[in-house]
Image (tube, rainbow over all chains, first blue to last red; front, side, top):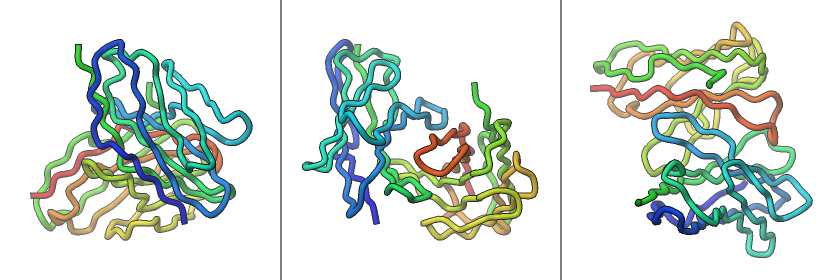
Length: 113
Length: 113
């Protein structure tokens, strides 16, 4: 079975500062990895995904994530955040060939002016 | 804009009442899902559907039931609401299984008093 741990429940940063949201996963088989974002009072939407190939994945709104197989991590980064990035971010994993996603607990990103 | 719609957006109801949470999508997706989301917790899959007349229970045991009579419609029903059912319920759909992205509705926040 797969599991996901998001290491920080809340991350406060100042506007225009860089940010990293951490995600570790466990799986005995090859996986697909995802980051979803949930803006206030909305559903989740896909930010980016890693399926195979290049370990650096670029997503929407200037976010990127790096797959590190040896450390079983898939951390999300943005070099300069904006107030509009305030949201909850969910990391998710699925075994290749599986039908379902397993989500982490979420990280609440708060941007201070 | 959302192609998957959930109603009601908020529902406050007394113990013992029967409720139905509506979910409709206009994308023609065969796969549909219900997730339960509590603050600071991971999303838990409670039901999913392969297509019309097929439904399965998810990873988290739930007293709710679902039906899939039409491709676009996937309602969730609680026969007798209890305070323990208080939560946010998110409906999602996808074109295929993972890694096809999930499209989420804005959710229904249910409070049982």
